Length: 147
Image (tube, rainbow, N blue to C red; front, side, top):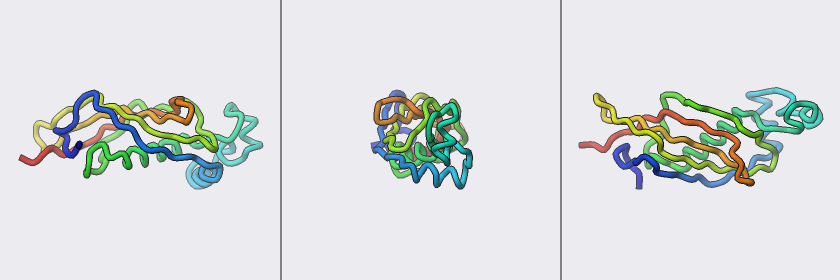
């Protein structure tokens, strides 16, 4: 089980549980954080490049963050980040889509001056058809095993 930075290895993989996105979830998030017609109104969304209601990309990012936190890749330690690289929305998330997250450790850099390291996990969110809908590569700060 991963508990410390020292337990991580390049190539280690993680997979989350699943969550289904409802029409109501999409509209509720959009009303508060991204009030655009293609997130709020089916008729208006039909007239856009999305050709139908689509979740806000930030909603997709928030769902992915929750799935990553629930996966607990750093054991008891929180997902403390210093930023995110390579964030991409690849396909719209639609009402009824069921998402899960898969991650792979791609970089590990131990700190030379602090009892921690930087771990990079490339996360990809997939829908129920196995299509990648979102990817992000956070810069995570993970404690090292006490000496």
